[in-house]
Image (cartoon, one colour):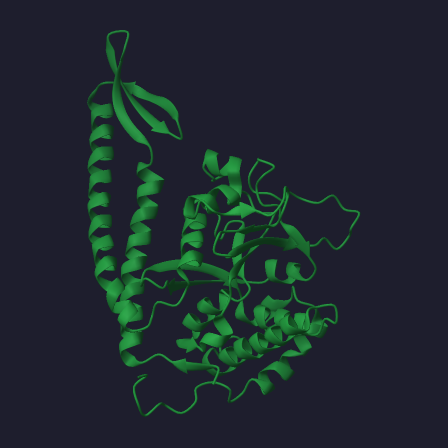
Length: 352
């Protein structure tokens, strides 16, 4: 059995959590967009001026008067209102977390969740980085309304696909300096990059984070940036053949729930592109045999989710044109082999 459907209670709770989390994320986004930094009065030359601070830079909004006093009032009242809303929604998520755990909805490993949240707060998820590899399965199971069997989800690393073409201007200055390595050390101070210019960081528990990027078609063409941070000690993305197909394929966004019962946003490649890419990897003779078998199993698993639970996603969709035509033709083999591999018979006893 590859996967099983969510129960009615699980489905209802998942929808409720996503609605609350959506409200929280929207409120947080509005707070960051409209009310970041601070605003205060400063006396210059014996006269009061209203100043706004953003990213350590102060800017004068003008001398004290009816207009600037209204601006200051709107800023402070608006920020307080949004902070109160965020606090209420945060309390709701706190109350939902133990219920999520009791219903076995907490799926994503905690270390992976904390890493993705740190990347999200740094405006990197979806604007330069997406999740690939085994952890993407947590998003695909949410799309399909199922839970994938644990054997297919076991992993001790997270693969981050870096699209060097994307603009990174919205990063905070400290993130621009230390990059992914700095964010990882905020999550767990034991993370260390494996060698200068390495693409992998590992913590004391052996959990690994890999930064990968597509290899260029023309090896003579000048490569784009391979690091997010300016420091030479940041992770340096390793170039891997075939990743351009995932970078250029449609993206999908899902709300997943971590092992403590808290939601987060995950952005992954289109599940059809994932399945076809995994099938391609499984056919490479230079790949580790054990990894080839895992690639093949994941390809069939995701293809079976698409055909049985997501029939609106067709493998002949023009949106998949970034993948080679020969690879797309193999979708018939994937979809046929993936039929009837989903839910098995229900258990008649509790999981004593």
